[in-house]
Length: 194
Image (cartoon, rainbow, N blue to C red):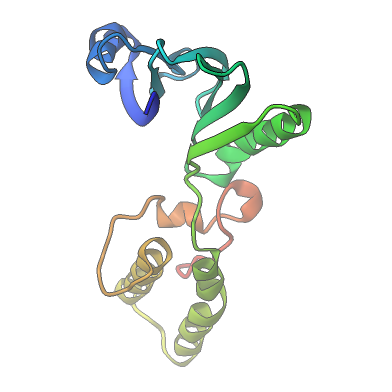
């Protein structure tokens, strides 16, 4: 391994020069996206004896570099991603990836990281259809107390993020944000409390 990426380091600019040598292996070099973000969200370290790395561009959600190994003259492009939590905030990331993929057709390109997107879209569809219809049936028969509605939403949230309603885990995004329409950065799930 001659290169690594760390995501969500949260290092502030004034501490970067002090902390960075402890993150990278001795004599390795590093680059970050700290000029594009209030704190370092992406930290890349590499072995300069094996790789030549050029920092091409970065934002608060990505850092793109070109890498050439000392043993081969070929270059690869690598983009490290740490996407924002909402769809609306990730839009610039997707636009960047689409633009880069159409412009750089001759250079091999690796895109890796945390896109902060739901991995199981089928869970979202299940919540929107089957589980929501079950809840609608019961609310048509009874007026459900607010505590019951909050419990149902908690079960939906746990199922969305973890896949099991039996064990609780902390949600990655607030339920109120999930209930926003797609055009506003949510997932379009109906808010049960309205």
